[in-house]
Amino acid sequence: MIALNYHELVEAAPSNAWCLTHDAFDAHLALCGGRLVSPGTFLQRCADPEADADNAVLLTFDDGFLSDYTHVYAQHMMTGHIPGFMSFIPVDFVGKPGRMGWEMIAELDREGGAIGSHGMAHVDLTTLSDSELERELAVSKSMLEDRLGRLVPLFAFPYGRFSRRVWDAALRVGYTHLFTIQLGRHRGFEPFLYSRLCVTNNMDASYMRLHLQDPDAARGFAWKISTKIGIYRQMMRARYR
Ligand SMILES: [Zn+2]
Image 1 (cartoon, helix red, strand yellow):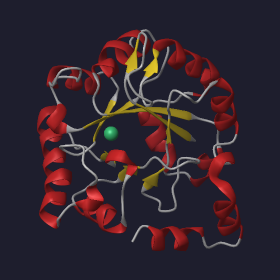
Image 2 (tube, rainbow, N blue to C red):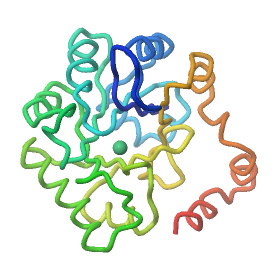
Image 3 (tube, rainbow, N blue to C red):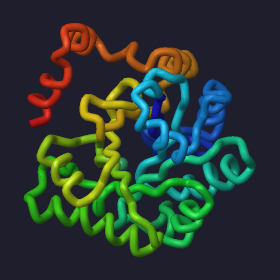
Image 4 (spheres, rainbow, N blue to C red):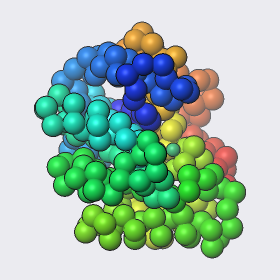
């Protein structure tokens, strides 16, 4: 399975590299064709190691932008174009200009979107003290759970930045699926880490086509060699200490 990570979608004139036009997003959806799966299906199939190699594609969106609701949910999910998506919320941003409010987030969750935590203030978690890290992970989780009335087991690292200390703390407070922005198929080098392609607006259709064909293609020499000789996980554990 392949997980894609988007941010804000706009009608025209994207303001930064992570912002895509509706047309660019539509072109990606066309390339995904019938391969899109709902968050529920993705999570079910995660437990099956065979599923790592299959062609399913999951859509995820970070940062709680209003376009998750107005565009992805209203224009694509409610009309049946896509089977659902994950939306990772930095809790301090809820209700701010350009971001979703709690009612929208709760509706998204009720209707089959999957809400996860993206921390509180969208900070690099590897730079925090233990108590700050605890607030980012545990308080965001409990605030989302209070609003949604269910457990929130999904977390995405802000800026994709993580370390063993960060992932240990996330697992300790009860997250079970931690999403990075590494390249590759969904399963990271630890079973609880999930790779995602962070989509930028310079990734044209040919880039996306290649990624959807072979999400490991752009991972480079070090990955190929270390995987081949079976030391990839150890290398990554050392790197992310
Ligand atoms: Zn983010």
